[in-house]
Image (tube, rainbow, N blue to C red):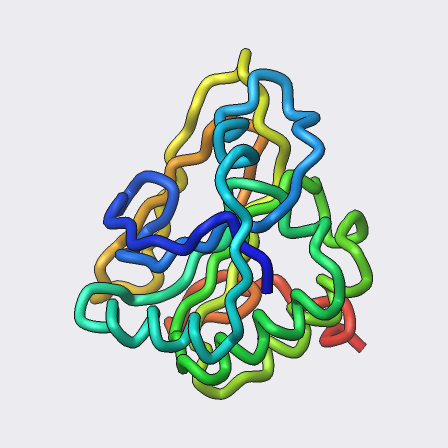
Length: 187
């Protein structure tokens, strides 16, 4: 599984709403005007097995609550990469996964990514699955999206780099959270 690098981030309320192991996808065509992540495309590509990522995740376990994939475009990842992601998330028993994509809707995701999201949504150990959609637009204001999952739960927020971006939650353990059904679930 080629990655630019995995690292720990505690940017709560910034790019992710929890302490996270962040994975940088390997590729992007940098079509977002004013891209904030061009430097990530220069980072060294390294090959990680799902088992080695699980080891890194477990070493961070006292500090992390989930995994975030962003920085470059996950929609360019091939089926093998996405299957390794599925294997890693399942093996690490990460309870939360947030994926960033510049695509504007489910229909623009590759079939491989759609299939992987469907498989991830069925993992019993994965409690929360969400996708942040929308291309970064440099001339648009940032916005904060705040979620209050239930009356007695702690609200959390996510900083979106431009106001055209939005989050869809596909799986959550919290009652009252608006869940977007995956296309195959609505039949």
